[in-house]
Image (tube, rainbow, N blue to C red; front, side, top):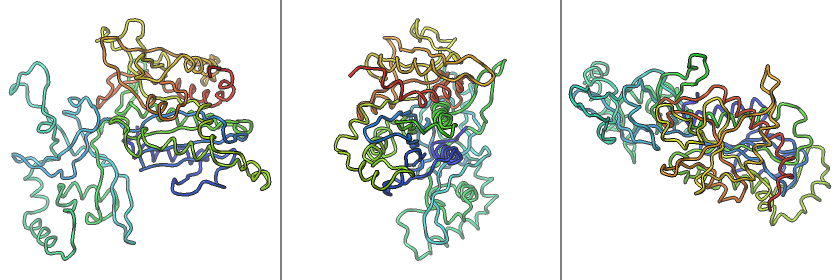
Length: 487
């Protein structure tokens, strides 16, 4: 399972490149680069990614079949100045990201991973993704003998700091004289530093471990964005191997299924020959904190990509220059709006499975079960973007889905979910994207337990369900879109 957004996007890029996708840059022109039948992807900030395949018969104003998901999960992030020490312990300052079940982070074998900005020998500053793959941190609970509270309560600012080791052990490793000499040399340097160096702001050994993973000297580590993660690996569980136990199922499962659904829909060499739509996935960062960032779903990322695609002249390797020029004369003033009006977005974010220990928390007629199919999420107050035409579309998509391997049973089962009237309801990127673009939208996700815990539970078979559903959506959207008539 990918560690966090940086690694998820890197691994997604690898999957797409291996499937024949070509990388684009937002800062470059796409004119004469985008070809009918071509496959492309681009990234923003290294934490969001958009990939698309252009139909062989696509032209401006034609629709786009889209799936959106997010790459981030609640976590603990190392503070800009993290060096702490108390009562003989080395500690690391962290801040909370998103709405995690923070009590689940106690007494876990933790380490760090993320992005490091380093200075190269050429004087450039580049990013390196690192992961320290051994436990180096732990947030210990207080013994029950010292505080017999019925509910586990703690202060997130003062009692959620992990320990990194013992002061005595670090002094023994470095030697106090050596440490003082290093500090003296740093202070005597003539170079002006607007900020204190990472070696001053963080524990020395932590920076050294980061530098080792980034394959640079500690002095070449300029800054980093590191988060904590549980070193326990994902595994298949349950008596019959039907469950997944892992961190970050929300929402890396739906991100993975989106990628594989797109790739599987292009498995045939002729998949795009008669396709008049574009097949697109967009995986965003920062959903867990509101999406209002440059790489979030509430940014211009997806609208900007759609606008650039909708106003490009149709090109292909087989078209003559005269044909391309004639097509380019098409009035593009409303091409963007026409494309969005005909397009459809699936917002794919994990859903809630019924919990056997808390059945009263669920609406009695809407209790999704694991491995029983993808969940359509509905909310009368528009916390989800689903409506009836979208449900019709998805049912037809599910009905046409290919049979899984070693089976002749076509189709993907679906489930429905609404929250109780006396319960709060989460939301997704669906409502904000549908409002920003005006595209028809439906919210769905695979059912899971322990959402936002450090360790979550999902169903093995639901991964296959979602991949086959998304493959069918891309393969059959063009035909179905013309048959579902509303406006």
